[in-house]
Amino acid sequence: MTTLQNRPNTALLVVDVQNGVVSEAYERDAVVKNIRSLVDKARAAEVDVVWVQHSGEGLPRDSESWQYVPELVRQGSEPLVHKSYGDSFEETDLETVLAERGIGRLVVAGAQTDECIRSTLHGAIVRGYDATLVADAHTTDDFSSFGAPPPDKVIAHTNLYWKFHTAPGRTAGTVNTADVDFTAVAHAESAEAQ
Image (tube, rainbow, N blue to C red; front, top):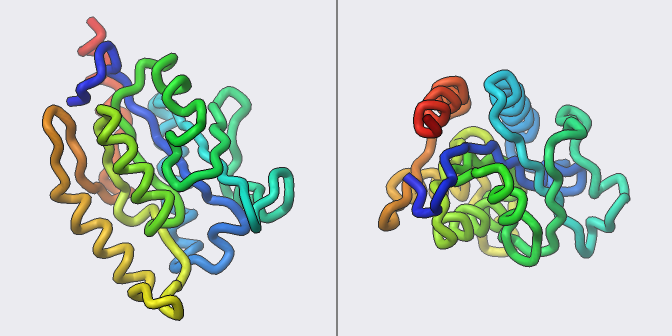
């Protein structure tokens, strides 16, 4: 239950699944397939899909590396949030987009686990949102040459600590793609609105 007032709705937040971000990511194809399944489920349940797209060094805006992967196609009615920091809320219009749609709960998927996903999850929680991480729908590159754990361990650790994350009046946690039921969420939101 979000601490934000009049925010009964849920959105799927798809973060940075761009050519230059996931080209060499761990289990890239399986993760992209899961995200596509989530997008399809959200659309079928008439739950908002909000896309986040990073630009910066190595990801110049409008370049091929900046584009979303071809397996994921945003519909024109779905909001696109441009960012240049790890946290999708930082110096973006994400908060405005979510407020306009009455969204207080986020289901988060995308890349990269150890930067933009973690930052966005924490950014959401501290701003009063409920934030659920889809455990098998986020990924990262192998940064072990820089001293990081291998990507499978980064993903597993993120899933572990987010599964048990808590904050007053807000919910966190993880769920697998197969267990995401936006239809049930949409029915619950409809009942709350009445």
